[in-house]
Structure formats: structure tokens, C-alpha cells
Amino acid sequence: MAFIVTTVEDRVATITIDRPDALNAFNTEVLRELLQEFMTIGHRTDVGAVILTGSGRKAFAAGADIAEMRDKSPDEGRSFAELGQMVTTTIERIPQPVIAAVNGYALGGGCEMALACDIRICSENARFGQLEINLGIIPGWGGSQRLVRLCGSGFARELIYTGRMVDAEEALRWGLVNAVYPQDELMGKAGELASSIAGKSGVMIQYAKACMNRAFDQDLAGGLRLEAGFFGLCFATEDQKEGMTAFLEKRPAEFKHR
Ligand code: CAA
Image 1 (cartoon, rainbow, N blue to C red):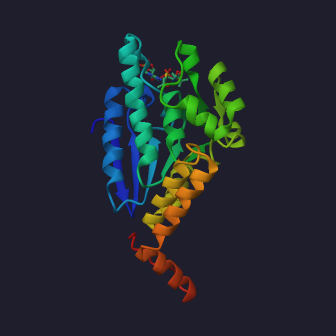
Image 2 (cartoon, rainbow, N blue to C red; image 1 turned 60 degrees about the vertical axis):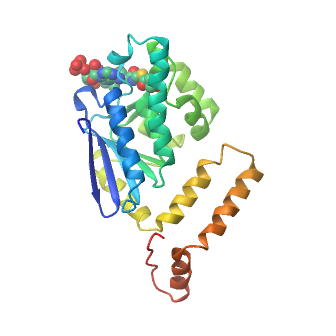
Image 3 (cartoon, protein in one colour; image 1 turned 135 degrees about the vertical axis):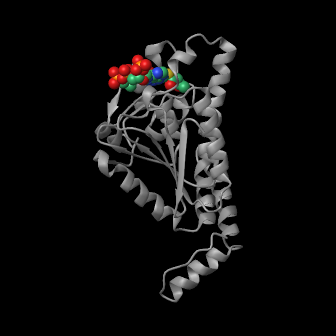
């Protein structure tokens, strides 16, 4: 791959968007590679958690590639939105949790990629924003949907209508990120978080993710039915037997992810 670097170590995959000359902006090729990589990782049973980050010290991703977008027709614009949405939806749907380690600018489509991840943490120099309004467009990869769900309508509307950037501390206040670290500590902290998740039962993490993904799609009764169904499925697994037996025998559980 030309723009994506992936490493896998101890059940944690790290996917790095590697186009630093353009602040890791997403052109069609970057999106295609990301899509392929997330689909591949999603099928790997030896991966229990994923970290998504950007190369360099300046940007996670500065959004969709403006030079590529400028001359698009309406149909091409729609296709480009759909391609980006395929990536964000894939991030959301793969069985493993994805942690965005935001190491600088996360703007426009960059912010939207981070929003599709399960958890976001960032460095002190991170900046977030849906700047599309300044370019004469609106968010196209889920910003108008996921930012409202994650941070609430008032904050999302302000960001999307004004196109202003927020710093790491403000992002933390609004729940856009879970934690802020000095830049040199970010990847270590992301690794610790990912490892703590990857050490749990991969099956249970997958069930929990599937339930939470649906929390905004249906009414409470439907969501509770879904949860009860997955809860029942847990009892068909070796990991449930091991988890409870280990507790009763006062020893750490050794999950087999099945
Ligand atoms: N697309 C294409 N190229 C980009 C880019 C983008 N989104 N963001 C940065 N670059 C390029 C710059 O053109 C520049 O390239 P050259 O060196 O060849 O001139 C290089 O990256 C470095 O950028 P700057 O010189 O601008 O760096 P800076 O430190 O002065 O500014 C910045 C950093 C504030 C992030 C600024 O680059 C910027 O505002 N970028 C655009 C951010 C943006 O508007 N993103 C939203 C895109 S629209 C979108 O994402 C739609 C959607 O919902 C899918």
C-alpha cells in the first residue's frame, strides 16, 4: 500500500495514514487503501484491537483532499461521500474496537474518521473541526450524524455552522475525546488501552460493540431485546465458562476468544 502502514503486535494492529506531505489528507487512493485494510483486519482473529493514527507530528488527517474535490461533478461528489462513508461504516462495523490516536489536526473528513472509531484519545496539540462550511460544502462522511450523536446537537451545530477549530481541552470537555496526553506519550497510552481491550475475550468485545452500535438506531425496547439475545449467546462460548470458572477459582481468566 502506498499511503497506509500497518503493524500487528500482541493482538493490537496499528494503522497509520501515511501521507504527511498533505497532512494525511484523504484522496481516493488513501480511502481505497484504508477500506481494504480495515476489511482485512476485521477478518483477522489474531487482532483484538486496532489503533488508527496519522504519520508525522502535525496531523491525524486534515480531511478530504481539497485539490481532488474541487472539480468534481455532483455525481462524483456523491460517490466520494459514499466511498468515505464506506470507510467510516467499516471502521464502525469491524468486530474489533478501533481507537483513534489523534496526533494533531483532525479536520473535516479527518474528524469524521475519528468519530467513526470506538474511542478517541489525543495529544495536546490536537485540533478538531468540521471546516467544510468554509469550503462551500457540508460534512460528507458522517459528521452531521455522528458528531450530533456523540457530543449533542448544540455543540455539533456550532462546529458545523461556524467551521471553527477546537483544541484538545475543549474536545475533552465535550466528550469528543476520552483523554489528552503530551504528544510523546500518545502512542504509548493508545497501546496500553488497546492491549487492555485485546486481552479480553474477543467474542464478548464483538458482542458488546454490536449492541452499542445499535443504541441510536432503535427504541429502548428493541435495544434491550438485542442485548438480551447477545447476552444469551455468551453462554454458548468457552470464554464465558472460563471467565466465571476463573473468578470462582480466584485466578485470572485465560480467554481463548471462542
Ligand atoms: N487537502 C489537500 N491538501 C491539503 C489538505 C487537504 N484537506 N490539508 C492540507 N493540505 C496540504 C496543503 O495544501 C499543503 O500542501 P503544499 O505544501 O503542497 O502547499 C500541505 O498540506 C501543508 O498544509 P499547510 O501548508 O496548509 O499547513 P499549515 O500548517 O499552514 O495549515 C491546516 C494546516 C490548518 C490544517 C491547513 O492545511 C488546512 O486548513 N487544511 C484544510 C483543512 C480542511 O479544510 N479540511 C476539510 C476538508 S473537506 C472534507 O473533509 C469534506 C468531508 O467531509 C469529507
